[in-house]
Length: 349
Image (cartoon, rainbow, N blue to C red):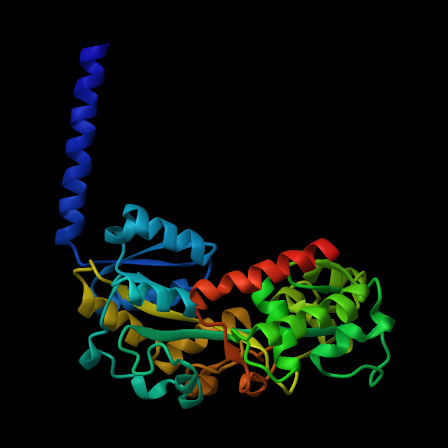
């Protein structure tokens, strides 16, 4: 049995090695992206047009993605889709290679307003925007009379929502909301500004908040348990029947703006398929292709403006309400300031 076991291992190892060689010879592009983030029909169309195979591997967080890459997984993929703070970190660590600019012919499709926000890579040398999004406020119109609340982040200080309000269990989001309300940058490193908004959250907002929750607030809202919640629109709209959207949900991002995120397509340093990877990125930004991604999630059209004319569904909210939103950029060692203050707030809740 031992001899058979050894022979089996040798055969299996040889088979795996041959498979790797075969994969290298084939025109294979390996994409590492968020769960359900890439429309399968768009991938299939790319495979047909470029006579290749696209292998999609999914992750559920930036942390999961980054840890896999730095612990030996970087050579396993060609394209990755990190958020803005991780793009910045990966650029500094030399984990990315430049986009092949002559293949990126759809560069002009990217919203100029968005490019102004990308201070870490304004020329899109290493990262091409995929989706720009922001959390906002959802009010249950069946529970609260229209016009009876202010449409600012300070809505969480309104006692009529006491015991029926929630905010995300995310310190960059919650503290970013308070910073925006006060007119400060969501990336501030000013300790006085951070102390001021911590006091606001602790003494004005938390007394009305039943919990910090980044996962189940959509279901709670749909059941009527929550009348007010801060979070991503798709989490709320996805739980409320579409025919009830208009009569139930008042979703908005305050005029002051708020924290936002940007997922971008990047080519990993060790990829040998930079040209094909750039072709894929460029293919995604053909307006008719990008519209399929927006339609799937009912996302607003902000990144690729020309895609809107090809959309077949109505977006959950207008893209323009994100104009004043600010990216949650990497804070480096100063992130510890936020974390420490957040821990004090979590204890008080």
